[in-house]
Image (cartoon, rainbow, N blue to C red; front, side, top):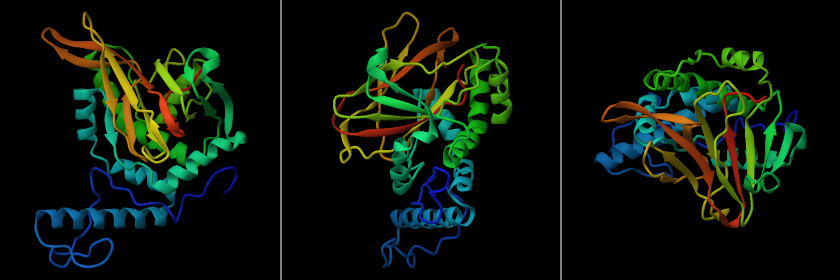
Length: 303
């Protein structure tokens, strides 16, 4: 641990990106299984060998450049067209294994390091639900800064297409620093990445993370705890309100280390008369047992 941050380099768990990094794979009859021995030939063997080789190549790349720098490599290798398609179709997209198990444990442990945070919110005191969260202060921990910066660029492409479809004026520069400069010039200078902590009986009411005049239309959350082991219940939920229709609810299945990308406020939807805006809210259902930690990544800063 250095300067209040955990060192994720060297021992980082393997990731499995949606868009594999190019690697060479042995023929299926000779491919080695992750635990040793040969993988049988066939389509399943090909897929297993490819996945094992991809994970090994990614882990080696992570060790070579360091965990925070490796985030950019990982993000660049994601299938962003598939992510955009899922966002358009369903209002959210899941990126499996964005963080490894060891990274999740170390990240969740940061919740106890008060020096990393600028403020703590007890939800029950404000009618937000039950549980608590803390906003990180600048400078952000290196892993969180790397996630925020590397995710912003491809998400800005999606955000600009959405705003064009919804006839919304704001457009977003390709570099996150330029967008933050816009926020800071308008008085939105407080960092918004946060970590949420829930115990048994806690929940998070449906809400939107707006924080000021300048709002980036997409955000992300990474589950740091293992469902079924660390906690029961606590499902991430989204609701959408379409004009002249009742609200629709989506329960998003997440495993430890998975990232979900979802709208902050509106998303476009295709109707009989063209594209219209769908209002979105998100929350967390009641934790029945155990404890749950989540990392939230919001790309605009707060007033």
